[in-house]
Length: 134
Length: 146
Image (tube, rainbow over all chains, first blue to last red):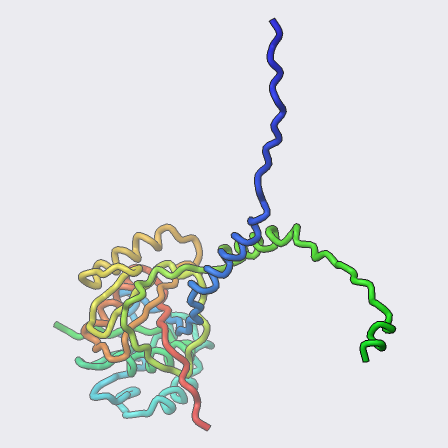
């Protein structure tokens, strides 16, 4: 019995449109992507124990009340706060001596708090948040 | 004038083939580049936040362990999902921080509306600290006046 010879079929994958598909994908990514340049301030805040330690010694304190900034109980502008903190030369101190307490009265908006936080962190301070007593 | 045209030497038309064989490869390499380099955000797109300003803000470090947001209504979001309280933020950060190996991986990006008051944002900031995260508070650069 003679076996039937199989026909050699040449199957090819059509790759002509691959580049078109790829470029369409690129265009999709470019159109759908939102490029956001995120800017932030970095601040390491000690947890409860360290904050308690900070209160035991005389540490600089920044108060925010009535829309005003107080540094060691004296009203200051944000520029004056920056100068006062720079004068402390916090980066030269030991890490546990860099703590600056930050206290805010009820109703303090975040934009003022953010500026104070940025000033402390920017001058090498470690922010210790003061919780209101209940 | 038509005579002059006839007299003019006929230029030979040369067909220059543009090599397009590698176009697909180039395009796919570009796609791979975009996929590798892009960082997808886990923030919910519809959170309405007016960012605070400061002259101190710098380019944020990439690769935050978590993202926290507080919108203008005081609602708290953790990695794009709404949470009930700051305690949920603390628990979430604690869980994620345990998987990290270096200090740089402990950054928690915080987006908070400029008008939100401290009774809302302070517990969240405390939760970030208690959870073991390093606060990376997002803001916009304040242009210095001349």
